[in-house]
Length: 83
Image (cartoon, rainbow, N blue to C red; front, side):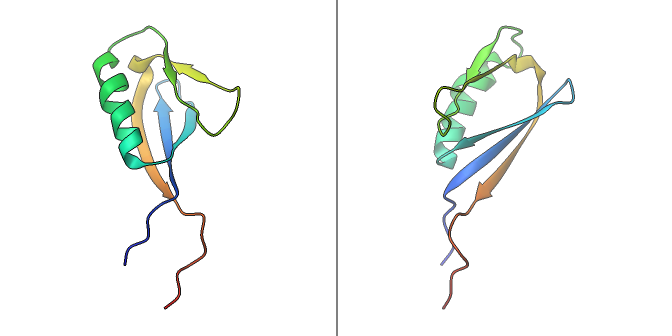
């Protein structure tokens, strides 16, 4: 039985060469943000908020037009499953 990731690390690669990481609790949550927020504004030079749910009081804004690549990494907190 395949394991389910505990969360997803989303690595944003920006045109400036910077890399940022944000985390989502589910792939569906990331897909919803990606398709409803980032894609419609992909050519925009206005700042948009990127949700950072696991860090209280911290937030990040980015210009959508500067995101050149995204890497999605599943994160597993538990130990290796044993039969």
